[in-house]
Length: 82
Image (cartoon, rainbow, N blue to C red; front, side, top):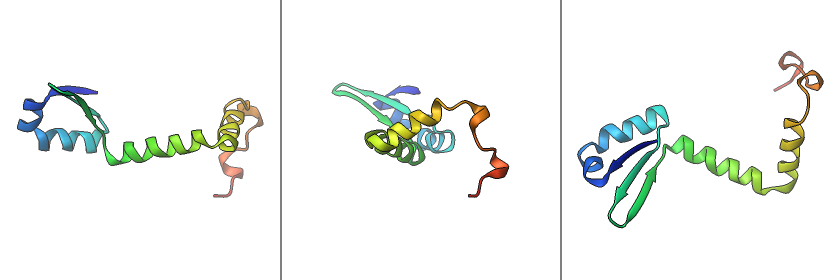
């Protein structure tokens, strides 16, 4: 995460936003009233999807089950139909 203050952010807004979008590097902007974080739209969508999946008890259990499944018991990519 890149940290900056509001003055530097104002001076370099286009460059910082470009870096955020291009490299998914969040920007933490400090102000006298508190901080704000800017993230790319891709990161935002990913975060929201993760929260949605984690808040669904059935999906959460399936994810945990998948994480605990040994690789030897998994279907190979060649055998999967997408």
